[in-house]
Image 1 (tube, rainbow, N blue to C red):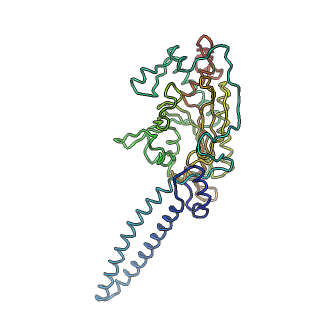
Image 2: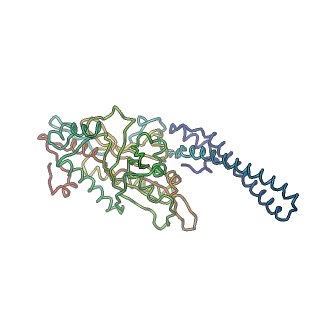
Image 3: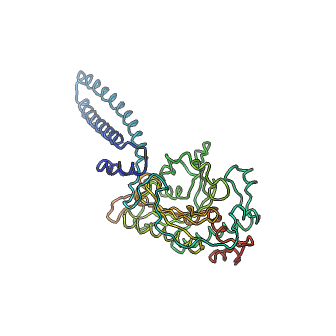
Amino acid sequence: MLDLRLIRDDPDLVKRAVEAKGIDLDVDALLALDAEVRRLKGSSEAAQAEKKRLSKEFGRADEETRARLREEIARIDAGLQKDKDDLAAKQAELDELMLLTPGIPWEGAPVGADESDNVVIKKVGEPPVFDFEPLDHITLLEQRGWAEFARARNVAGERAYALVGDAVLLERALLSYALDVLVTRDFTPISVPSLVREMALVGTGMFPKGREETYELPADNLFLAGTAEVALVGLHAGEILDKARLPIKYAGISPCFRREIGSASRDVRGLVRVHQFEKVEQFILCEADDAESERWHATLLDCAESLLQALGLAYEVVECATGDMGIGKFRMNDINTWFPSLHTFRETHSCSTLHDWQARRADLRYRDSDGTVKHVHTLNNTAIATPRLVAALVENHQNADGTVTVPEPLRPYLGGRAVL
């Protein structure tokens, strides 16, 4: 969320962000609540001071005066209780609105309602040209016995899948390769829980807006996370880190779960949009410095691009529009990878800078060299997400005989095999 002082000092800036991101938030109503909360706090403090004064007087007073003071103190206590109840209600309303305050987008973000307003800023590589009729990944995987779609749907419903044989090994190779690359770039590998508490989803910014997209386990008061980012933000929530520890660079790996409510009719077949998937996530905590955040954003983007280039996959990088980037993000670049069967690029990576918006929600702080306590900046980007990238890889590297050429970097993970 935003610093409340920023909203007070520059409400017009926040209103522009609300409009640009399409957020349903009345900034004036938020400020009115803030003023009422401050008034109630001031009233309570004044009443407490008066009660303290009267209590001191009570100790020196005669019996007649004490009777009067008792009545006054009782009146103050009743007013204090009313103020306390009013303050609790107003503070809860204000806290709820504060969770809806959007991060201020950077000036280079295209202003638009959704992904249709995203702008392609770079294209790398050439889509493959086949001298045969290429198969989509569904047909290819089924013909090779590498996937069970129908049987998996019998078990788990739509968007379910089961990889088999070499497809499983290929998926593990992709994830292991991504982890190894991140380790060479000084990221710390970490496996994190997918079962998380509500506070972790609120701290990340997934709640309250994304609740309908999240699987809930009400008997346990837990939820299934859609990305390792949720646990990685929560990992240091409430802590004050030493500046010397920054930046903290995690390569988080976990199974991920999304309900995909908003895409009920899209990509129902195959591996492009599924409820359960695996991901290696890049995540960074750094100093509260805009230039530092910008540098790490470029680093995260470069790492993802390097992985795709090494895998021989054509892709495009887009600058995401304000309405597509999400409520808390300062900047977001998607990377879309070429899918021959779809004759287009589809999102495989999403690189985001959130400045201190996430850190304020999760109370993620550090102590600067001068002793000042500040909120960190957070950034994240996909390294590899499967099985979507498995689908892209087999489609782009398929051969006329139904085999798949293994990209050079993956061969050591597959016993040196060049073809599957």
